[in-house]
Image 1 (tube, rainbow, N blue to C red):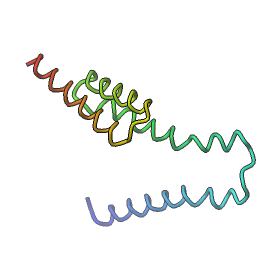
Image 2 (image 1 turned 180 degrees about the vertical axis):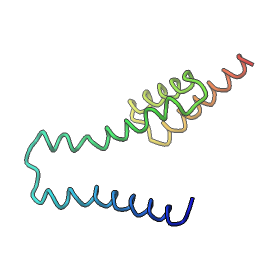
Image 3 (image 1 turned 90 degrees about the horizontal axis):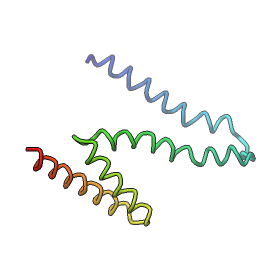
Length: 107
C-alpha cells in the first residue's frame, strides 16, 4: 500500500470518528427531556457491544459446540454477578476443554 493512500485512509477515518463524536454535542445543546429518547440512548452502547460481540463468540472457535458451551458458561456466571475476569477466564477454559474433548474423541 502506498504511503499517500494510507495517510488518506487514516485522515478520512479520523474525520468520520471526530464527526460522530462532535455532532451530538453541536446538535443537542439542551438537556433531552424525552423519557423515551433518553431511555433509548442509554441502551445504545449495550446493544452495539452485543451486536459486535455475539457473532465473534459464535465464529471464533473451530466448532459451534465449544462456542455455545463457552457462551452458556459466561451467561450463567454473569447472571450470578461474578467478576468480569472470572466470567472471561471460565468461558475461555470451557472452550478450551470442549475443543480438547472434541479433538480427542474425533481424532
